[in-house]
Length: 173
Image (cartoon, rainbow, N blue to C red; front, side):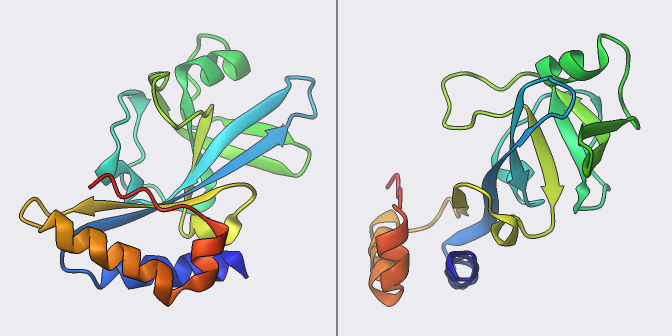
């Protein structure tokens, strides 16, 4: 139910002329069958890369399918799983039933951020694959009236009362 609510809110935000891009992100994690510990990651929509910078060291996410089987690893995670050799095109078996093809390796993400992850799963609709926290990020048109946008976003909380109860909105305006 909550996933469907987030999807409706995302589609509602897409109707705002002030908003140029809407990116979906959900937390996910796996416990490895190979005693490698816990892997923490994010399911991300294609729009994620329009809003957030990822310094690629090898490979690319561009042109890859967002089918929940392609993965971008951080440098630390790539070295943990494959050592220092190239892992592009290799299969990362996280559990007996869960594996991904490595399409890129990115620099470790900065520590002064809300994002904490070892990997990014390229996902067509992360909100429907929610395992932990679901977030909707928006990119705002540089000519937008931020006061009016903040009022519209606040009104969204009234239009979607379950959304207001289940999540917080960070407007940054």
